Image (cartoon, rainbow, N blue to C red):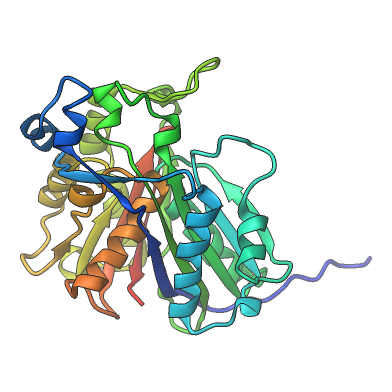
Length: 322
């Protein structure tokens, strides 16, 4: 009997470089107050956002993904032709066919990689990061580019204050490579499909609706277990975490998770939502990149990340910041 041979991968995978792209246009709360019944105090007290970035016509999903991906490749020290897998996480593609992964790869000079798009809502980056890490450890890939990119303004009713004040645009990327020493821990992921329509674009509609209170309750009461599981799987505890960078959905949710986990005072907490809004699959790499740029985080720090959102889906990992 002929036996199928399997590839042998690396012992582990790690992030080699990060990159980000933030749209040029800054939109303040005062600007939104001109077109809807809201104000700066109301927005900041409920979600913690002071401003967000909205993409212009020329800042397409592909353009933003290429910009962020190019920076991540440059930071990794690899050449584009050393990348053999490209995964683009997004929940805001207006046309489902074709996906944008192959186009992003081509624009970046990545030659004939395995490439696909992934939609796990705001958990997309962490899902894609896990898929890339597992592919490297299984021997299916050596170096992967993971991009989270969103133009949520395309699918948001700009007169609906329950969503328009929250969602924004941007892109973040990571190059993941083989490593003798694991730099990405096992994923803790799952879904609660009984609430699948809490965040949705219903059939026949072009814009998103969100049951904000239901999502808030779910995030603040159900997801701490996933964070604990991610740390346990990686063999670390709260005292070992240098940086906590959960999905930037709501500052109150970030603060609630931080309090529940009991991090030491030295742990750096990502609060990129204040300036960037909720950028869905892009929010975690955007937040990590911002912390590196300001010096609040440094190379070698141990970070705990968790993406969560539409589906309802969630995924978290412990990782070493490049």
